[in-house]
Length: 318
Ligand code: MN
Image 1 (tube, protein in one colour):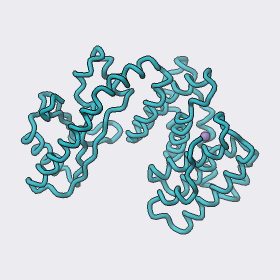
Image 2 (cartoon, helix red, strand yellow):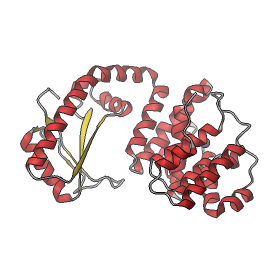
Image 3 (tube, rainbow, N blue to C red):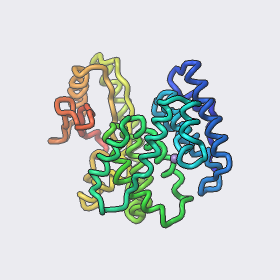
């Protein structure tokens, strides 16, 4: 059974909440605990854990008290005897609106290819009306995917397919890249177990080498930037998600040696000018691979994503 966060842990994750914010989250937490007290999940654990997990996911995404409270309450109308009037009088019209929105979206079900996936995605966005409704639904789905192993086998595949076709691309469109990756990778294990296994094994062989090379390169990079007077920057790095790696491997006859963006370092600076300056420093330090520069600052992605990508040789064959 999962170790569920307490209400205090949820509040601690929030960004400078006011007294009223904290009181609201506490109230929603107690209300949901009471409303779901007789329900259990497929795993046998209290249903309430699902609401706590959803709320924690929302807090981690930096959402405010209203959205977190609505996250705690999102299944009350659908799954308990709580009436809309009660939610309205206890929590006000805004939270009622969010919970109604999440409930409405839950009724929209993916049934495979009989419907155009793109139009279903658009329907989701249109029906949500408020972006917070989508974000609650996405964090709800994340926890459902994290606990999918307990769901009866005949339901698993449909839920995973729906996640892969609808929810993960929605997260991507909202610019929530990490959530997108998590949803994709969790779903991939169920939609295509064989290739999931194959891709994990291919990646595993490379991971140790990647970790070592990344931290070395990161140190060299920080030194190079400091030497050129770039001081106001943050760095982090990511390893490509399994599903997105598989999609790429499919196009490359499963040859992992031809995938150049398995690992990537991200440098976040405070101005566009610094972005191009950092690119110059990197290309001075490491030889860039031809044709691999993508300037999403000059040409942003449709979801608003703006950055510059490049691939360089760091000396260890990667
Ligand atoms: Mn739910």
